[in-house]
Image 1 (cartoon, rainbow, N blue to C red):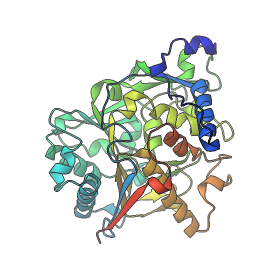
Image 2: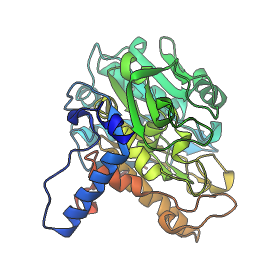
Image 3: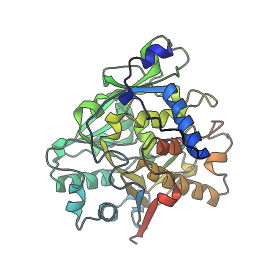
Length: 387
């Protein structure tokens, strides 16, 4: 069966490109690992070449903007949020103005998707003030509200978080599936030409049905937009360790994702996440990540358990999802240390986090796949404190 799967995938379609064997032991191990990954997961997905595609023009660069007044009594405050996004974008791009910063990535005629993250519910979801400031930035670059599509995998999830109430006139909302369900093989909102295939099948699904082994990309991503802004929230995740930029794409852009974390022991997020994000149609369209850490969670994720939600009052900006996730992972671990908890990578299951191992290795593997910079020595985090 494996041979028949691979025979349908040309070399340019495979997830990774094997490098010549190196004498250095670490390079050898990385090459061997990626070779194993290529046999585990294959992809069929092609897109045009984009210089803005991940890791983008600012590999390894992270701008962290803090503002003590950005939230009060649990409510986001518009002016500080706008100041944070303006500063984050100008510092990221080095542009002389707000308008110039957005014009480095977007232009008139672009149709831009904005991927929100409502899985944490209304109490741990990026706010209308953040979304509107991003839309203002797109407007400054010549992208009208009618050419902006806010999207999520499940419509019901976004409705419950209140996101549809935030949309100003002209902005559309799209969802690939109406609501969460266990089956996860509905195809109406997904593109049969773009998928990641991995030898993992959810219990009860037919392993001989190709749909059971594939995760198909949503039509919003493949056909309705030409650029994407990723807008995740900084959160802990029981199976993946953290859910920031990479997981907001891997589990928000495709169907059939439950197979990646079926039980506390059958957990494949470490490989599943970078395998999905490596699809050319995804990596070439996502050009900007804005991580909302005004409110964040350090345990019990991805839902918003009040005991573990804190006001970090920070937003992160970058084009490199690996550098951003490495930085966010450290921020969550710092908060865990502050409250006397073990780091995510060495944490043990408890009543609010049931998985045996939190697979933060998905970040390092994504770096090995060329999606961004994982090495701390090559990550430049510029911290800005506005108030």
